[in-house]
Length: 217
Ligand SMILES: Nc1ncnc2c1ncn2[C@@H]1O[C@H](COP(=O)(O)OP(=O)(O)OP(=O)(O)O)[C@@H](O)[C@H]1O
Ligand SMILES: O=P(O)(O)OC[C@H]1O[C@H](OP(=O)(O)OP(=O)(O)O)[C@H](O)[C@@H]1O
Image (cartoon, rainbow, N blue to C red):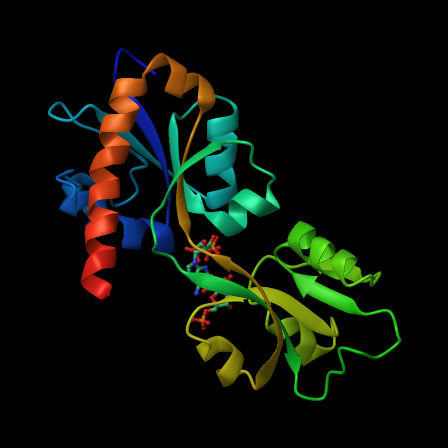
């Protein structure tokens, strides 16, 4: 961190879109990010923050290596990448859930060793370990639902939010695993060095999260 400017690694894509309104409600100007085009770093003369936009797994890497002070990232990524960063806040957005899904004829109790397609091999392994089942895991980078539809795998472990993708691809949910939401994590060293700046930022966001929660009740 240069001087007292805190560097915030924000997951680009879905998380970025949901977080920007929260940041703005907290009084943080996000015009540059909204109009970013291909830019990835957003600095401002008027704010003590610098935002960097990165893929979720890379957000954890930036934090681990001290190249960012704060990370905003899904709990799915934090669990899968065994992040040891200090979690300060559940932003209560980016909510979805891990499920075991497959074609309707899938038998989760069949004796045969299953092949499971997923973007999350560690979470999948832990789930089947808990069930006492040894499965073969195939890592897939996207469109995970294709795996049982094409015969690549017997079933998938993936996240679902609205259930639309599962439904439109004629799949069925066979089990519900952990819930997921967007978290704010901090590099422990940065927290020791710049507690005031970091807690100022976190408190502003926390106030908005609490307010939004109350409005939903
Ligand atoms: N319905 C959802 N599907 C996937 N991720 C969701 C959903 N809702 C919230 N999320 C969160 O958003 C993150 C994924 O964001 P996004 O889909 O933009 O990235 P991605 O999966 O890497 O996609 P891409 O490879 O297309 O950029 C997940 O880590 C999760 O925490
Ligand atoms: O329940 P739903 O609201 O339909 O959302 C679930 C879908 O969203 C995610 O994919 P994503 O859009 O990130 O695309 P991907 O297939 O490239 O990972 C996830 O892997 C599901 O495919």
